[in-house]
Amino acid sequence: MQNVVSPSINLSQISDIVKSQKEYFNTGKTLSISFRIKQLKKLHDAIILHENEIHEALYKDLKKSTPEAYITETGLVLKEIEEAIQKTKRWAKPRRVKTPLFFAPASSKIHPEPYGNVLIISPWNYPFQLLFSPLVGAIAAGNTILCKPSEHSIHTTAVSKKIIESIFDPQYITVVEGAVEESTALLKEKWDYIFFTGSTHVGRIVYQAAAKHLTPVTLELGGKSPCIVDKNINLENTARRIVWGKFLNLGQTCIAPDYLLVHKDIKNDLIQRIKEKINQFFGENPQESEDYGRIINQRNFDRLSHLIDENKVIFGGQTDRDDKYIAPTLLDGISLDDAIMQEEIFGPLLPIIEWENLDEVIQLINQREKPLALYMFSKNSSHNNRILKECPSGGACINDTVVHIGNPNLPFGGVGESGIGAYHSQASFDTFSHLKSVLHKSPAIDLEVRYAPWKKNFGKLKFLLKNML
Ligand code: NAD
Image (tube, rainbow, N blue to C red; front, side, top):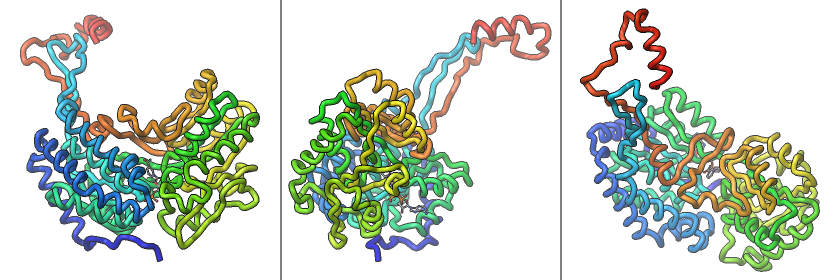
C-alpha cells in the first residue's frame, strides 16, 4: 500500500466549487492591482510564519534537509513573491507598441487581462515550490485558482492546504487534495487555464481534457536531460557541478542530468573525480548523511531498483527498501538499448556513455525526444555553439547543471515531449494573462481609400499599403 493523501472533498462538490470561483472572479475583485499585491503579501507572511512546518513536512516526505529545502523550495518561492509584489503593477500595465502610419491617428497597446478561473496541478518532487511558484504568477495576474497538489507528498500537501486555507477565501483560492479520481473530475470542468507540472504521460491526459473545452495550457513535463562533457574542461568544477545537480533531491529533479556523455580521453579521470565528490558531499555512507534525502515512496524505489544492472555498477548500488534509500550510483558500459536509457530515471542513478566525436553526440541526442534541459561542459566555444544550435531542448546550461532554473530572467519550460509554455517572474505573469491586443483609433480623421467602391482608388490603396504599413 502506498502512503497517499486522502481526498479532502466529495467528487460531487467539485462543480459547485468551480461555479463559486467563477462567481467570485466575475465580481471583478481580482482585477484590482492593489488587491493582488495584498494577497501576495499575505502569502509571503504566511509562508514565513509556517516556514519551520514546511521544512519539517519536506523532511518527512523526502528527508530534505532544511538548507536544501530552503534553497530549492521556500527560499525560491519567497524570492518570487517579493519580486511579484514589487513588479505586478508594472507587469499589469498596458504595453505600448508601434502603430503603422496607415492607421493614424491611432495608438496600440497590449493589455494583460486575467484568464479567469485556473487550475494548477503539481507533482511531489518539489512539492512546495511547484505548487506555490505557479500560484504566485496566477495571483499576480488576477485569477481565481484551484490547486491540486500531489497525493504522494502527503505532509507538504497538508501544510500547503493549511497555509492557503488560513489566508484565502476558498471562492478565491482553494486546494483540492486527491489523486487520479479527483484530478479526472477536476479536468472534466471548464477552466480558463490549466497549469500542469508532472509526467509526460499524464501531461497528455491533461492536454486531451483541456482540448475538449479549448482551454489553454502550460505543461511542465519531464524527459531525459543529457549532460555532455568534452575533453577540454575544468575537471574539478565539472565533477562537482554534475554531482550537485544529479544527486540533489536524489535525482528526483525534472532537470537533473539524466545520463552522462563523456569524451573518452577524460572519462576515467572524470569518473574518479565524481566518486571523490560523492564521498566529499555525502561521506563514505550516504545513508547516514543529513544532506542525502530519500526516494518518495516504495513504488518509485522498486522502479529505480529495476534499473540498476549490477554488472554495470562501478560505484554505489546499495539499496534499502524499508528506508527508501538508494546510494548515489554510477553505471558504466551502458548501451542505448539498456532499460535505464528507455525512460526518465528520476533517481540517483547516473549511466555513463563515452564518445569520440561531437557528431555522434548530436545524433544520439537528436534521435530522442527533445529534452527539458541540456548540459554541456566545454571550454571549446565552437563545440558549445554547435550543441546549442543543433540540439533543441527546453533550456540549457553551459559548464553547470540545474542552475539556469534559478535565474528569474530565464523563462523555464520544455519543448516537444518535455512541455509547452514557460514560467517564472514576468513569464509567469504573462502565462496566466491573456495578452489582449487593442488598437485605439481616433474618432476624427479617416482614410477614404479604405472604403468601397475600391476600384477607382486601388492604385492609391496599393501604394499606401506598401509604404505605410
Ligand atoms: P505525475 O504526472 O504522476 O503526477 C503529477 C500530478 O498529476 C499529480 O498531482 C497527480 O495527482 C496528477 N495525476 C496523476 N495521474 C493523473 C491522471 N490520470 N489524470 C490527471 N491527473 C493525474 O508526476 P509525478 O510523479 O508527481 O512527478 C514526476 C514527473 O514530473 C517527472 O516526469 C518529472 O520530470 C516531472 N516534473 C516536471 C517538472 C517541470 O517543471 N517540467 C517539475 C517537476 C516534475
